[in-house]
Length: 106
Image (cartoon, rainbow, N blue to C red; front, side, top):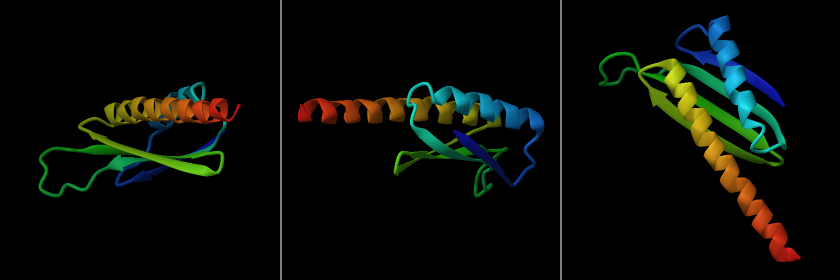
């Protein structure tokens, strides 16, 4: 699996890059056929919001399909964790659907 990390509105430090790679790498154990993952991390636009708002967006290529998850938080690390948790849930549901379809064919 390849992971492409880009930033928006801020610089992604090596520490943040390692954290993203670690967290998104953990997701692969829930669904083995992930080919590619694009991660965009940064500061959300401050439209009528107080304080800093960070976001993390992940676009995952699973086989020939694409899945997208985006979360915001007051801390970038929390946004990354939220994305990882939501992506895990989505992939487990996706895998269950595929298994149900294949068992229905038999």
